[in-house]
Length: 404
Image 1: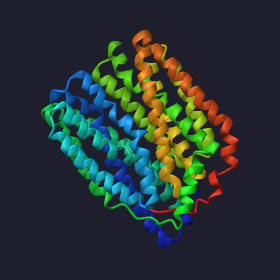
Image 2 (image 1 turned 30 degrees about the vertical axis):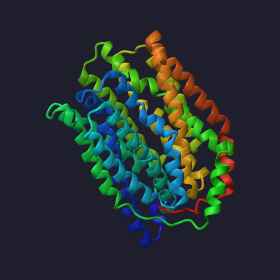
Image 3 (image 1 turned 135 degrees about the vertical axis):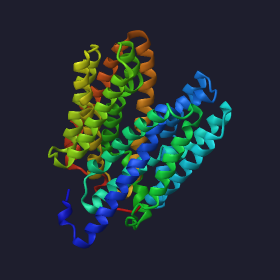
Image 4 (image 1 turned 90 degrees about the horizontal axis):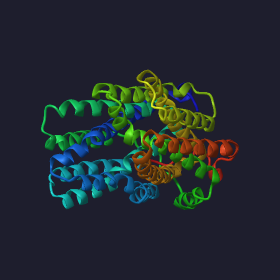
């Protein structure tokens, strides 16, 4: 990847503007997620939604990832306007959460939230696609841009955690709306990118993506390795609390994982290994992490294991994005991100359901299922590494970037 110093001076200012504005948008978008994930269900309970419907409503984002999300990303690509799609989805997301906040009846909340998720879940895949196009154009690195999303997620969750003791739980939805407003406002500052020249090439290439074994290996491996975190995301806090750990300790363990993830993103420009090998290392690290987690480790060991999140999630993400950058033509990046998100949604949703069943019977033994998923991902990527190194998808040059 070209260094910024190799870009003409006239373009360096544009490169910096692109990087700063994208980093701000990543931060605001993940800030919305960071306020939503821990406390949206608290708001649902506060407005009188029963436990059964809270579970159903919470499943909506996963469903939209493999239903409406690929349609939105594909539509953005056909119209050659990632930037326009990001602005539209960011503002519609704000409007959607504002409407959700005014509803208290179960059916109304469900319908409003479902409609909101149809435009909200595509935001991050569209942002990654937009980022990779900018990375290809300006010779930037993905990791240092993406780390601001992780940092903002932590900040959003901590801020909402403080506010929950200050404001009524029924008002938490407006904290989510406020951060969504910030995200929508920042989306207006995103830099436009070049437009593609030929619609027919994009349409043909989109069909060819799903016939390309290298691309399928990328999205399947990512889905398996990232999906292997399902039991961790769902049951780690529950299990740690049952083991006698306090709330502050549990929060500290989660923070350790995200800090390790941020560090990996920050250092990623220095990585010299092939992206496929980075993904394999991330997958093997996940195998080791879940094996140790299944043994109910002590707090000291658990703290070290949490630092492995930088490898199991962060390194896998960096490797996957760099593989897509090398293997998928930039004018097809939105479609590629949509397929990746759809595959991840199917796998992680299935893994979450399966982990609930297994955890109910075997407790910590659920992590052995996650071991099998991560190991399968490592094998798929190891077998595909030569294909990915030698045969870029569709034989399209990365310089054919289309626009935002």
